[in-house]
Length: 151
Image (cartoon, rainbow, N blue to C red):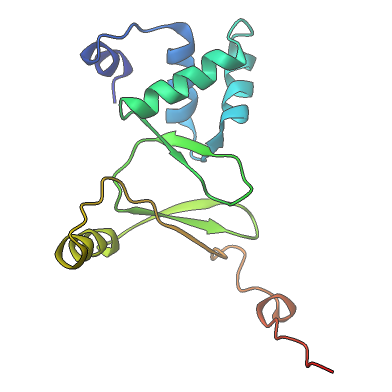
């Protein structure tokens, strides 16, 4: 995606913070926190402050260039270039990697909500937790937590 064209469509200027934040987002294979984006931008240009990075991320989300995802209850939001809702986030609880999975689940969910609940979903974000193929299955002690017998 061409940042300059997208910003001009919205009558926005191309600034150094915007260019650097987009560069970090688009070149990363990871889902990054705002803090990690700031650190990467700051390593390139120390004149770019934290608030400029946060404002840029908010702007990018507002115009559809970036997507903010809450991948854990107590975890900071993570950022990535915008993508379609039908990409489900698979979060590995062992190595913290985040993978995208595409399928027809979101389409089916939207259809069900519209047909059976008279509800039009504006945005859908599905996060599935588990373990990736690299980490393998959880050790038996983690995967079988049965309640202790009452005395």
